[in-house]
Amino acid sequence: DQARSDPTSASDKKVILLPCKNPPNRERVHLWLEARKQYECLQKWRREAGLL
Amino acid sequence: MTTLTRQDLNFGQVIADILCEFLEVAIHLILYVREVYPSGIFQKRKKYNVPVQMSCHPELNQYIQDTLHCVKPLIEKNDAEKVVVVIMDKEHHPVERFVFEISQPPLLSISSETLLSHVEQLLRAFILKISVCDAILNNNPPGCSFTVLVHTRDAATRNMEKVQVIKDFPWIVADEQEVHMQEPRLIPLKTMTSDIVKMQLYVEERAQKT
Image 1 (spheres, each protein chain N blue to C red):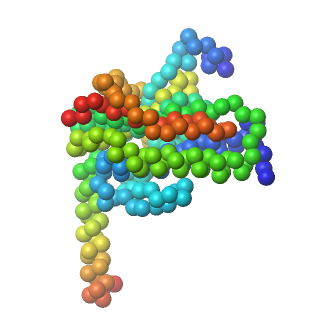
Image 2: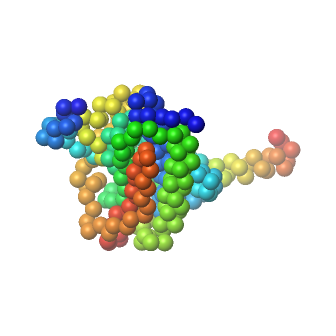
């Protein structure tokens, strides 16, 4: 609490943090979306062909 | 009707839960509205009694959840001054910043009814403002990405380190490049004042995006 009330304290210094890891990039997400669409098409075809 | 006070052990946790749930919805919606990811990964859901767009991409969803899981202990202790969703161009320079400025006023007591209905109503307005903000913002250049910044104090980072997930999801101090924006245009979106939390949301937009 003492550190908090003392603005000159090193531990009270303002900091801006961010995650070290990056979120998935757009291309990666796009590939996932394409793969999912293909999978869904395949599943639909299998259902229609009576394979599921 | 239950009455909660600051002395209640779970009070900070309740506020952090409410805000992190809201921030999760807000981040998904910002990524959708600002076209950071293909629209095909988003599905329409209902949150705060309004339609929102939420991602169904497992890796992205996990990333957002991990981020907020680490931010939660800071909010719980009233140590997160700002949570900022930054949209960056291909060169990793910020083009837009959605700044959630959070403060928790001193409080003597509050009813649980106030907590649930009034705050939810106020948060709904934020969601609605985010969903239409593309009308007042300029288009972003192609190939943008995003990150989340949290403005806190050095001493408070110890609370973050206690979280188990931090071991697999470490945080670092932001570089000048990630924080600085040239001649930003400030666009206020929404302000809320309630018994438990005060929050304002504004967008800082880079004047020259391309």
